[in-house]
Length: 491
Image: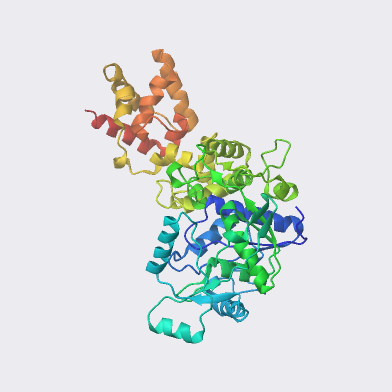
């Protein structure tokens, strides 16, 4: 990569929802380039497509970026010398750029209706030709524009293609040349007066001094148009790099059919943000030497556009889970407690909640769930502790396999355990565990025969932390109440 130093890069999402994994990768790679070169990472919101905008989505995107640790230097929310950074607030600037193109003869008005355009496409298809908009011999003047508007016709502005080949010098894909015959007179201003993506994007990159554009491969086909616009306006052409697509493990475009595809969904699922960033970095890029585990600072030191591959990346969810499991095992308790707190904050409807846990309780949960994969495992294994006693209902399969099996052997075990458990004092995990081991030895049965009936009675399932820890967290009164409740509900 021959990126100038310091580089000015930007991330320019449309406000249509939370940040997608693909967008997160684009933001990360741009952030890494800025940090590596001592440059500037700009956040711009491209919100001129009003039909697709979702209220509040810009705030969600910014929250997702901050959660990942990707703070921007200039742009929405932080300001800078090139604002405003919402495209919807830059319309006067786009009009001035549009006027330059019209005045120089590099653009013209067009009045075709949707039906007329469809008829042109149908005719081209019938002739087995690619549709190219037929440029008029004489461009409409202001009088023609006024008449068209009075007649209720849609008035757009089209860019006059220069009639020359355009070569995109791409840092990832190599040189990509588009012949003049493939470049049409595309629309740069819509009938509602809003600029299209092409005009606004090119105009803003120039105004904000962007020197390097790194974005998804899906934009590569549009880049020749952007270069043509830059030439017509006398703008410098930044360096370009287009990232390979992100696919699922079956080679299909990543979509919700296989699970989460938005950063916030992974946050809600209980992943560590540093793990997700690490995993995203490896989608199409390799630091070399078979290295996979990296901090953000290490990525800054190792990152190079030269090591971005051209082949599509595969999103391996099993690998992500493995990454997170390993990271959890090696992360300090203080960090885990903070991220557990965040997990509970973004999941207010869980049985476990921030309101029910103080700092000591959070740390205790972490200790008794050693080996968990994501924070969701803690809710799965311990959520029952925070349920109302009357809401605990035993899973029918658990009843069949543990309590009713062997002529109600599990129920019989529970009945015999109640008076023994009543005698435990003080009620600690160690004392409970010791008693249950003693009972197992007395009856010549393994610990499972003693502990599993209790586990089903107090949790409703066969899943919980170690039985001593489970009963200690519930407390003596609630533990005995749930066991008696289970026995009373016996069929």
